[in-house]
Image (tube, rainbow, N blue to C red):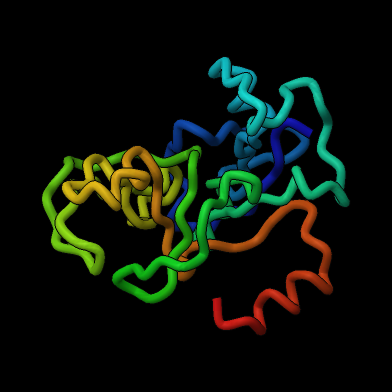
Length: 177
């Protein structure tokens, strides 16, 4: 499966660069959102952490587990790109990811965060334009340099998708991240 159907709320039915309309769904209420196999294949990513562009999705593989935008269900990140669950965003808990897709970056600005001064750029969902978190452009303290080029997405904007075992999801949701 290289594209998946999503049902879009009425306010989100405007054109989106990652949504294609057509068969078997018709009308603006349905769209097709790129999955990671399409994105990675089209952009030439071929690292050991990347999914193979020739593989098909399976419902039980850990490599298929993804996180999507809770507002429009666009794919955002793969579970295997999750670095840490121990971050704090402006709206609560947040995850740090190595790589994300279907997002755009705003202009970098300096912010004093819990771990010191950083240059960060807000990231927006390409489909619904919600501010999801930020990208670390530059860390000024040596101990924080590992964050540069990484992405924070707040849990308030994430939903687990594609291949999560139900018992694992229920157990994970009971933990205080």
